Length: 263
Image (cartoon, rainbow, N blue to C red; front, side, top):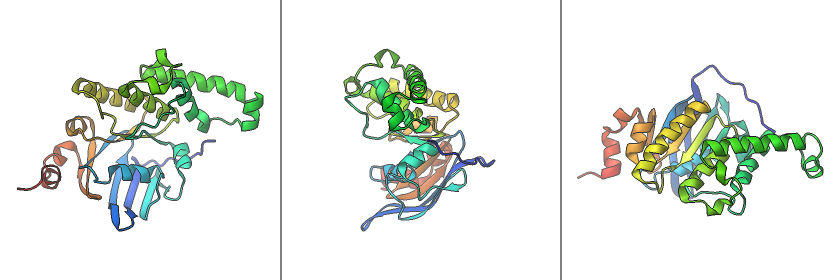
């Protein structure tokens, strides 16, 4: 069952306060602080090994903080588990796609709907109310999401048979089935050609507007990020080295050095 949360009037939706994650002697995320505002597209970039995916894992509670604090709509969420984070309205995709390969596209999306149903295992197995009604509703919602990402004609096909780009879209549909307020996209343009990346930018903007989302994305293709995002945070060796609008970040000497090196 979904949890409810009191929405603040502030524009801020997510706040990281001095968050740190250590793995033994390695500090993967080091004292990072930033605020993400409602309805913005927030980019997270940096060289390989900068700590970007680790930061996503911290936000979604796949791993715990070593120190610091995360706040969502003003409420501390640092102590919550991943399913609780999802129920509150934070969903994600993964750098390495994590679909259920032997299940159909429709089944992959329906699975994500369980957080928004009130049926128990008992009522579900026996077909007792409210399970039948909720099953119909979940199926219809899943079909709508598949149509939105252009996969409705392949709803019955196993996800392992999909091309890489279609698997990316299916994973986004599954994340949207959680009815999130924040959607985290981990390298959504990976493996795409230039024309597909342009289409992806339009698709992400449409998602933001259609579902009233806040979107945080990790992406290595810097031109895509610069053209798409409202603000960008740059990590290097786990530290935040720049934060601001694309026009400011692209000219930051620390960012240029992190990507190109000094002479």
